[in-house]
Image (cartoon, rainbow, N blue to C red; front, side):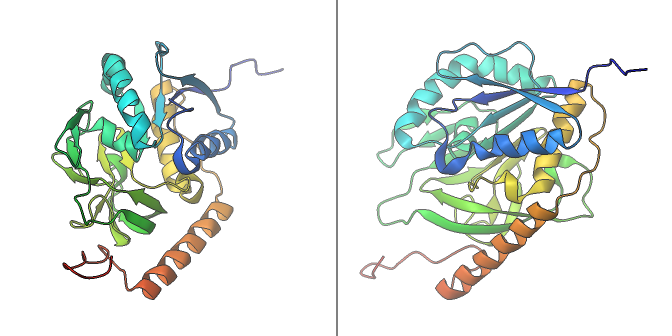
Length: 276
């Protein structure tokens, strides 16, 4: 007898795929879709561009990075979507944001001239633009994640790898960092934190895209989204290729750090008169 029950599915929204897709962030969708398919789970993506109406039901929202010139337009449109996005979060849906997406989920972005771009305030953090003479925070990152999104798995540390490239310095309030950097700069080059999380809202500065090299994070997001969709627990799936990619990323980051003398929280700022 044929089983006619519908396969479990995840309703997912990609916010601003045309304008917020820096450094291959669209590849995060591919990783989520592929690793869900390994378990027989379909991810049904809906693109929501500037001015579009979002769907009533949503299990997972993804927003990638974007250049400064599009961030203001995205911020204005996100203000319109704030009640919807807040509703997704309150209902237990998952939100995953990268770089500019992280900044826009915070309270505000303060430009170098002192002007402010209001964020959604869904994460307790703020971002300050680099001051004159400060470097952009660029390079490969290796971070330790002790307990992703309050999963309770505090006894098992995870590695998070990726590539950062941001001028803004993000400082967390009540939100806690997603990870602690071993190699790289992290949120601000000072306190060693990388990314932010609060409940089922998870954000990172890491591009690459980040998920193909971090299968555990991909599966963590999928597990939360599938739970919200009523599909039960996410079944285990092998990730040998993803682990190999992660090990290579770690090796590259450590080689770069050793060559440049840059470990832990990054390099010091140049003194006046020094070459940048």
